[in-house]
Length: 206
Image 1 (spheres, one colour):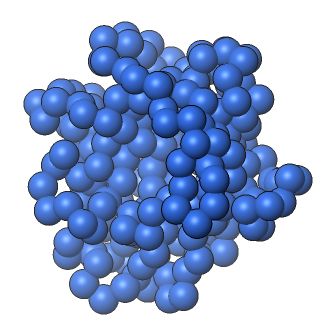
Image 2: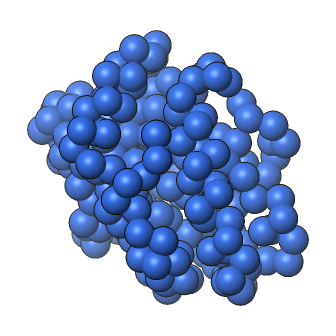
């Protein structure tokens, strides 16, 4: 499924701004495309996220996930399509030497946040996720927030609606880039997302 509403120029501008703006959303999917992907997402097999995780500090999680999406699932086609769009943009940016040639999307996760769940507390993605972390929002509501540090209760909410693609900077996107702390909460309608990332520890699709 192509990204009918994703404008190459808008995407390029968004990626170029990630060095200063931790996360930016752009239009990506039509309502019809979202509905199709929602049906596919609901056919996956989900499990509850580990309630408390984290290496140096506790991260609280309250959502469902599927981290074992079959290699031939159409969501991997989405990943390949997005990679073909993002890679030329990275080539134009001041990215880490060598990153562009190895960049792919080899890490895929589907998540569901039921109404009333607590989402996930402020955290940073693993340092192995490089260049750009992308999240497709298929349905629901909630707040995607950027925090200045893990303990900050007040945070900036990034506008992010169903049908949009959120881009978040990751190591390699710019010299000295620092991974942003972020959280998800305030969910009243079933929130479904697809996370697409480049895991530098993995050489082939999961």
